[in-house]
Image 1 (tube, rainbow, N blue to C red):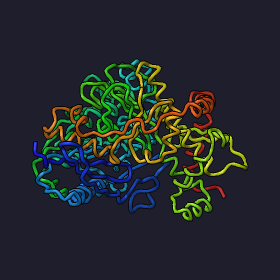
Image 2: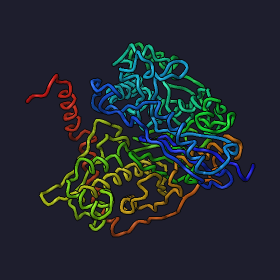
Image 3: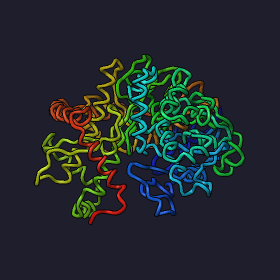
Length: 559
């Protein structure tokens, strides 16, 4: 291997894509570049069609935005690195999941065809598209009724975020478009298809999001029982060769080489999930190491030598994170999104003015004020369900709650309570794993929220775990680059590449016993609320959502 060999990792996130140039020999990060998606996340209307309003819980994207990342961020990162593009030996990508692209047989997204440009179901369904909850509920009920053996591998519940629920929603709400759809493609595989001209499904997204266990998808008769036209869904729209992580999907085409400025013919690694590539980037390939990738949402992943079924997890997949080991996933649907929502919609003008006067962002300002408080001083407890609950309740019909507000409550009080709520949500997930025989000894944090010291210390105190931090500010992109090195043959496997190219700072935050005891009391109140509203004690959140949905269908508001 040449000492001047490099790989490129491209991380496709919720709002932007980032390209990172990495030295193969030691994982040094040479340069990076970012491209913001021009269309962002579509939650209100289709692009250029304001009259095509979207219902609640929809989240769509435009696939051409992803190609813009290849055309701009990749060549910019290489230019900034100052390297000869001929020294790049491989490229790999990671993507948010489950993000689905409806396409023709050759991979053309249906939204790019004039006949379907005004059809919402023709667009990419982003991971946080939660409008298929009704379909997910039916999948779960039927799976329980039939005793489907795969259900336990997903904690007993299938999420509305996943491939089958979203696909069933397309069929039931736009059957004509469903009939025109020839491929239902995970975005992590679609972008690789665009790069190398070969369509293979990656073992990670396929196992976690497409209910693929022990070499099989759900049986056709199960799918037909959901809807007669759904019985052939796998054969007609999903089934494709499944490739292991770190393998080569194909080589860079001349067209993709022109986009990226990289040499045609270099290996393109099989696609991967953004959260999952972050684990080897943090050298977290051994038992007991849970990685929390914290951004707009949080995904919790870990590998283990043991197979257990943990209620409420997102799945356990053979080779789902590291080939040869069981990969576990759980998650929280909203974390950074919740803080951003509060800053945008819940903080008064004086907070923004004070932050500007102090030369800080509003997040930094509220964090500084909240850091002055003792545990419990604000008198609040919150539920972190503003985007529903992914784990352990797996119910996106739930909603957020802040309890204990008085006329003395200030914005920094609510901000801290929301941070604490997300920490409590993570503790709930950890306890589910530990209780069911999957030990967690260390929490490793990746993602932008690791830069918030108050949040990190709260998480350590709440979970009573040491918090390590991935050594890269671009954890997913570094993880993708690591897989590119394996696909190019520079390392024998992902574990070897992780040891050589990964980076982690150990025990940056450790729990404080006094604060941890105080948080134990506050966490007990969180658990009471969690179970009361989330486990059938009071169904008010679902009733309110039903009233909202009914009102949104009214032809005009009542004045």
